[in-house]
Image 1 (cartoon, rainbow, N blue to C red):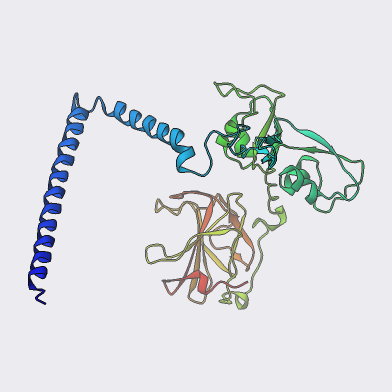
Image 2: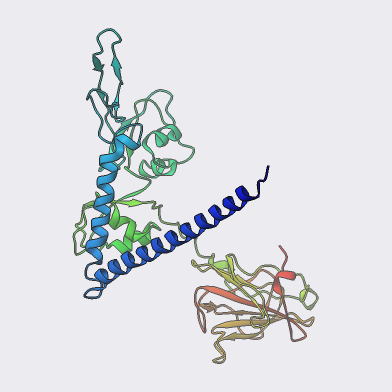
Length: 372
């Protein structure tokens, strides 16, 4: 049997089908472009004046399709309740049940109360129960343990007993009673908090002019008690009491840290020193024994008030930006002796001491030399 004519007819059919589909696809594309251009022309009238109307109309149309077709396209309708054949609303407890014998649908609907998550609007009192701890009470009221301790003048070692009454803040932080002269900024600074958080707390009574009334209670979210300032160095350690250091004690080449604080700048080729910062200031001690060669404001180089000590073995140390110095040139000082106070004189961006250690005039990285 000759299959050649059938094969040729099939090939011709495929070619004709491909040609037809290509033609229809091309026509569809042209029609789409025309429709698109028509819509664009409408939207471009008056430079897009109709764009908002088009967008809003599209959204409303989409919403209508979802609401109207929800019951057809989805297994459950957007509108539900106790209607026959409609599933129960997921926000109510209970489900519709159908009697097999009678075909009557009955529903048991129990309303569900949705509890608001908004914070309490006032400080409340809590009576301690048997077995309570500061941790369990704080967890129950959604505040930090520190908040409970601060508000009730307790320490971490304090014990609470059944019947004690504790003041509970609505959020973690501090409660502050406004005093004359207080401002939002001063209160935020005092408690190391964010001033905007105080303004944003919904139950703080603050007027549009940000004026505070004396006696009002303000909640300071995430606030903390003011830092206790460290006591100044005892007077007997000031360099007014000079020590007579023998030559054999000078220049041990074992250097100690001159001050307490954080490293705010490290050693680099453009900064041949380290900066030790402490916002509370503090005393500056000699890193090693030696003889003071420079003390005070001697030029405008940017060091400000400074002290330079020659340790007699090729090493020198420089302490800059002091708020005060307690030594004079030619005075011998011992390792650890207080020679001045941390400050921010000269070219300085904050309270710190600029420490340089040099050997035969060459700057060394103090971090590789300083000991305990």
